[in-house]
Amino acid sequence: MTKALIVVDVQNDFCPGGALAVAEGDLIVDGINAAMTEFDLVVLTQDWHPAGHISFATSHAAKNPYETVNLPYGTQVLWPDHCVQGSHGAAFHIDLKQDRANLIIRKGMTTSIDSYSAFFENDQTTPTGLEGYLRTHGVTDLTMVGLATDFCVKFSALDAVKLGFSVTVRQDLCRAVNLEGSEEAANKEMSAAGVILI
Ligand code: VGL
Ligand code: ZN
Image 1 (cartoon, protein in one colour):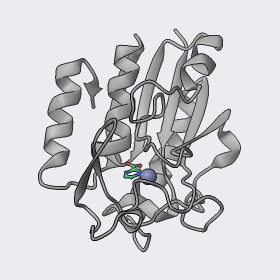
Image 2 (cartoon, protein in one colour):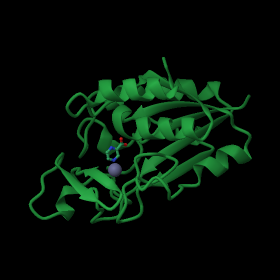
Image 3 (cartoon, protein in one colour):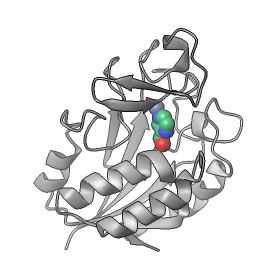
Image 4 (cartoon, rainbow, N blue to C red):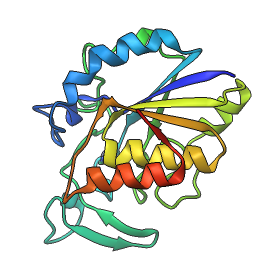
């Protein structure tokens, strides 16, 4: 058994004061740093959008953040501009121990497709390359932590189960955006899919 910790999007824009702030997003950082020592490999993901990304409300006429649009790949929630490549908001939280990461994987770089999952973009076909990396290293078991539980953590966990990994989500080391009950819905969906929630 080879275990990897997947640290999802612990970036300034998802922490208090950021463009798409998740309540208490910063409170999980110390626990994540401590958890890193328990794994064979540590992967950090980084939401990394070009300016004018399709997931930004500002890219659509007469749309506000948190409204939705229908795109070729399905319904897309629109967000405030966030995690723009090279910006302070896109940088990892200052206290996150980046030196312990074996791999940093960036996602959401295709202007016309969002990417919540660390494995596939929201079209559910374009791979990020993370699966190949983990398989090459013989990884069988994944533990996921980070932001946000109900979007990037959830979609990453669901894809990982579909790909055949054994998947645990440490809820104490995640925080949710929680749009209209999306946190509870995400937990149910993950449980039903076979994700172990602890
Ligand atoms: C995320 C919304 C937009 C996340 C990323 O990391 O959960 N959520 N982009
Ligand atoms: Zn994003």
